[in-house]
Length: 528
Image (cartoon, rainbow, N blue to C red; front, top):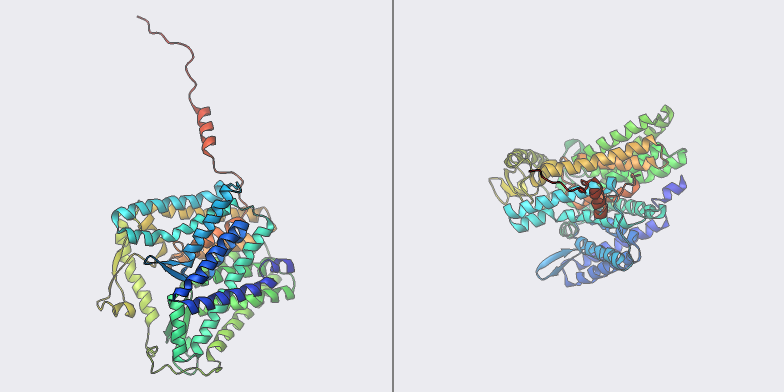
């Protein structure tokens, strides 16, 4: 059990967290200055040399950036009037390192049909959607709408890496490090926004907003939660898109609790990070994440029943899980109400909206207002889609948008309904390609369970994470974001794939020669 836990956490985890803290501190200090070019260049050049030395560590670095980097703009630089984010720079650095391995070290990718073809199918659907988009819509909108899918290019290093146990351990460690950082930073932001002075709140808000790390909103509901928080009818909600990885890691820890814990000591060791993950799952107040956790947890529970785990073991897991949830709730409550330092009074500031504020409910109603116009757009081109950059006009109830346009009319090509978004922009081919990936993961997981693989607990948990991702995407788009796409790529090495390579062109030509009609060897004459 101890060796399993060390796959996720070891002494290097502390150094990793400190390094991330330093990087974020430097990003804050250099934000909106010309000095941001220095840490940007150091990270990009460092990523290239790390990839040049080790493909797996280069892949781990870019996965870590996807986990902790929000929308990829932790550090930005301006070049020729254009803004280049850290994520794009690291992508170019890794791909340059991959090219070095291909051309100088003669490393060739080994594509496996079952593992890689669904990703390639998604790429084909993206290319079709992009071509349609640049003919029907402004090129800038189509490019901006589709550029997240370059994340699927990381399939290339995945196909080149020899996935030994050590290589897999590096990725698992990176996954845990990133999820832990997101969880700690979310709780820290919740505490800081609840206790800093008005000027401190404003400065911190500017950083996380401009770096696109988190959305911090001041809310006065729901009423039952506000009633638990003394000293003011308000509280902050800290939402980071990367909290999706906290959701995924929650399912991994729950799987460890279900399948590989045998003693109370091991359960307690898992419960410690589980409390932190639960705290963020709750405090994010993301309905999409809650739906994802519910559906992913349900899939995990079905496997527990199939494995016929004893009632006594299930009861023990319930006790530990329930205790962890209660401690998580208590931790959130303490982080908000603890008077160290004394919480500021924001009643007379621009942050305060009043007890009758219903911004979240208005945002939900706006989402439903969007659904009808999206369906109308789908009907215009239901098979091939309308391409990337396709915009839809709807009436929004969001007060922030109504401050810009009082009648609420809003036009956008970024949609909340995830699968409708795929249908509009990539048509039926896009839906089929993502469906192929989903059912391929299910198939590989079922095979792992039936064959009683020793590491099936990990396979099951990552499959539950994919199920949670797809469930969340129905309401909040993640399959068209580097966070969701990165997770899809990152989990591929941990499934047992049937080692049937994708046919090469030489093999295709060889088969074609075999099935070709034999040549006519006897002359044929025509009688008079």
